[in-house]
Image 1 (tube, rainbow, N blue to C red):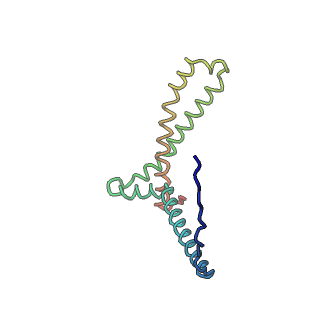
Image 2 (image 1 turned 30 degrees about the horizontal axis):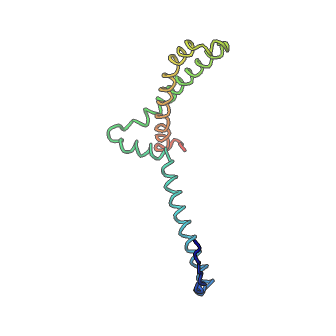
Image 3 (image 1 turned 90 degrees about the horizontal axis):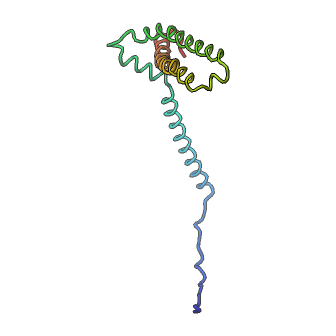
Length: 146
């Protein structure tokens, strides 16, 4: 089974005349458009990452029903932080008194996690919720926030 394959030459392709000045202007316009889009995206990203601004807006939104929320958070934060640091210190001291083979004991590890795990996690979450509100209250009242 032999077949013949015939190839005809392609018609010559003519390219349009290029105008370097017009091409440069078009390219510069495209670059400017991309830079404007990047700037817009960066502004949106910065606004999304400004947690203090969101907390400020949160405090201002609820200001009529809870006018002293920011001040109460500012007062509570040092006490919560102190309780959190005390718990961390207590946990670290407990670890420092243990021997290496005791730490690997499953019963001891379960007791350790039961004693410190839940309290430490929940207290840390509470501090991380109150701290930005206290910082936002500082910036609203002009006491020198960020």
